[in-house]
Length: 73
Length: 146
Image (cartoon, rainbow over all chains, first blue to last red; front, side, top):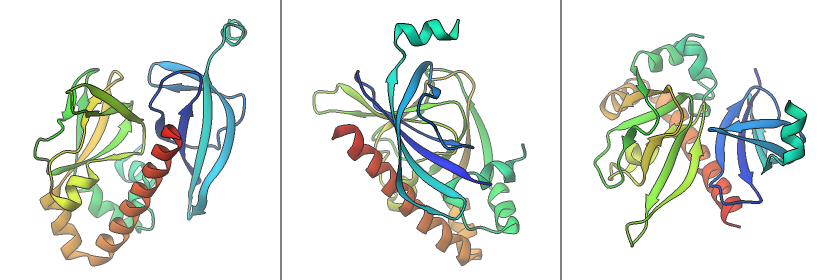
């Protein structure tokens, strides 16, 4: 069972970032809810080598733009 | 999902056997938080380790001018309070739920220390995992302030 420990860093506005576990590797273009807000992943890199089932990932996100929101509806 | 399965997804317990995970699960108690509820207050004594199993919690630190700065939000599978567990110092930050129905598992220090004394392999594995988790948090912090 692979577990992805992800460090989310938000660009484009002040945000402290989030650390959370996922059951899949985040992908560029994926939308992610961090608390009440939705962001879009723009970069994914391995932060540290995996250890056992755990993978350590850094994902850069940006707030959803108007065109992103329109794609939802 | 049962508690043992939840704990298996927490890096703090990576490397523990099924039996050892059951021993850890036996000293956990569940705590539910409403949005805005404070779990720990910076400067207060703290004896408990928390594991986020649902929702998000905000970690904030008071500055010299008493203003509060959020340094990170933590979601599922993350641990809170490991510094106080190790060094027995006061809470280094204030922890507040920022989502409805946030859930944490609570491990009391005395229960944790007793378990580690009874099974030193659990103590060795968990302490090594705490160090790795602190390292990950530092790397995250470096990326957010860089």
